[in-house]
Image: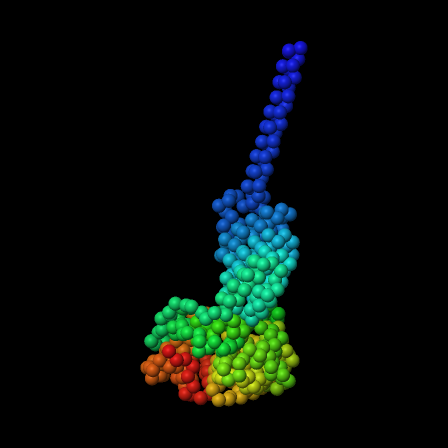
Length: 478
């Protein structure tokens, strides 16, 4: 009896021990499998996860059925910034179809870290209306940290601050909106005493004067447009490589130097025809968004455009070219300069400054804009702006000329020189009187000399900026 009892107990102890060992083995295998998920995608070690060689495997991992693995893959892709041009488009596409909200949130964070482009920015704005509050929050944070200040973002923030269903998202939207509407606080910027030679220029050369208080411009309104990506919509139209750089530099000048409130800046990247009509109005109705934002006789207006222009094939008139336009049908899907100038003349602003870094010859620094059309068929007509009192119009080139780029500073040559001139060079010896004010006459003399010389020296071609308005009009006053 005793022997049977002892045998019975030993059998149960042995079975329990074997069960524990089996569980330990299974658990160990599971941990090992989880810790080595990346090995099944050709990534040999954890240290390799941040190497560019891991990118193909991490991209494949974004399709794994395990949400944790997809999330981890997105996380590690954000650490490989050298491959951002390859990974951002993939992440943008995955965000569109990903169903797990935490994975989507991680993908959004990764895109933000790698840097926003026009496609990802557009997606982020759409995600501000997503059903999941965490996704809305990450999209909001991503746009803010990415420096996007488009009017569509501001409008979405206004709506979210009032109506978002999630209390914390409402609070974050209100806080972000308040920050955008405050006057900017920035460190001083060194002003150059003279313009550098083309060889001396760098991306930091396009300096602006020290920041001013924003009280003078608390009612002022700016429209800043950078149209870069044309080939996405029409492969025959070359991109304007530095248009986004130009727009961002002018945005910094307007907000940090002139003191415009960020919430009063309509900032458009890759504007469509609908965007331009919505902003400036149509041929029959000049009351676009700009008109609505202006306080009569209290608002200064600053307009900047960097992108393609094009001549109409049938009428020779100039058009701003939206990114979704066909240059061969620009009379139908472009934005006429005639309408642009006429509508701006009806905006009841205190003063207006218009800067166009574009040419209307049908040719650009990156190739032909109007293809399959000879220079003989392009009968270009001059579009004289309707200039009212206290209106300045500055354009990059003369009729039939090309608006050049400054490869060293990665800006349009005209924009680069404008920022140098308004940063003090136009008030220096040979151009101004050194009184700390930059007048239209001073900036005109500076641009016509420096842009023309640089275009001739760098590219062997003529580029003569056109400046219209009262020469005594003060554009900047220290």
